[in-house]
Structure formats: C-alpha cells, structure tokens
Image (cartoon, rainbow over all chains, first blue to last red; front, side):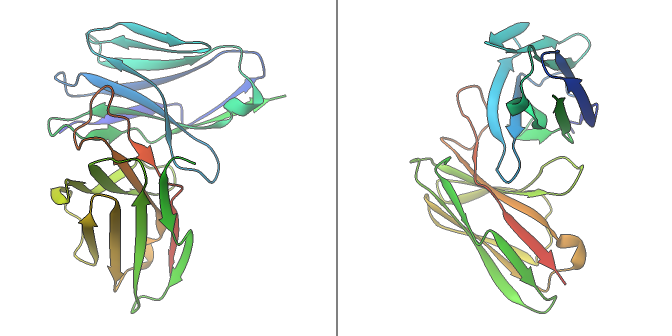
Length: 111
Length: 116
C-alpha cells in the first residue's frame, strides 16, 4: 500500500527566511497531493494541493513542487511570519481514493 | 470555524466506561470521517461514511463503533478502551468520499480522549 514519509519532523527558521518541507510517496499511481496546516488546538486545514499533471503550484508565499519520477513533493514557504508556526502535514492519495498522511513537521518561526 | 463541530472537546474515561464522541457538519457534505491523531504519527483514518453508508473501515478494533444516522451527524461509540487509545480524535467531512482536487476535507477541532 501507499506509504508517505515526511521530513524534517521539526524545522526552526528565522522570521523572514524560507522553509522547505519534503515528502516522499511509494505508489507511482498516486495523482493528488495536498498539504494541511494544523495550528495549536485546531484541526488540520488545507493550504495548497497539487495534481500529478502539474509540476509546481503557487499561492502567494506558499508553493508546492512535485517530482513524479523521484516520487517526492515539497512545500515551500517564503518570507516566513510568526503566524506560519504550526504543524504541517503532507498526504498522498492511495488506490482506494483515501489520503495517506505524513507524520507531520512542526515549523517554528524564530523572531 | 470550519463548519465541523465536535463534542466533547475533552473526555477522560475509565477502561470499563462507555462513552460517545459526537460530530456535526453544517457544510452540506455527503462524506464524514473519523481520524485518530497520536503525537508524532501520521493521521490514521478509522472510518469513512459516504451518503450514510460506511465505505472504509481500516481494521479498527471493535471497541470503537461508528454510527452515522444522517449525512450531517457522526458518532464514535467507545467501550472497554485501553490506555493506548488515548489520542486526539478528529472528525472531518467533504463533499464526496473520495480524495481529489476540489474535494477538500474539513476537520473539526478534535476530541481529546484520555483513557485511565
């Protein structure tokens, strides 16, 4: 079955710098890859997603890149701000059309 | 406010107790989910209901029993739980029960469960 690995588990960056979180997946048939952000005391919330027919997608300071050959995708956050501090989860769709999730990355923005 | 409301937010129960978690969605969605979230682990999908029919059950122990009386409400009935079942239980909903672009999953804030 599908397996998703996410790195790093914790990432600390200076405010204003960029942050990159990486995920790898195992099922080459996967074609949908969302990223969710979970703030303290809240449930995860979709921030950006990408389909396999696209290599990159941007939304203001957030971008996601996909390398289908290598089976990995990454979340890029530029000009980080304190409100970016949260846990970020990647996911990949399995053969049953359900999401398989990474273990999460705790992003800490240092002032 | 995501449109998915979970109660209670916190629950402490003994191993011999019977309790229930409740979820309600106000988004007009047709699919509802229960997830288990443990520290530093991936979200674990427990159950999926689509149009009130269970379509996914990921080998969850029978001490967890879901109920979906209509497309807006979802329950998780708990009995004879173990301490290792202590976790955050997240309810979610989406327009349809299959992951895809445009079918965003909306999560509630979760119910923190502690089994003593």
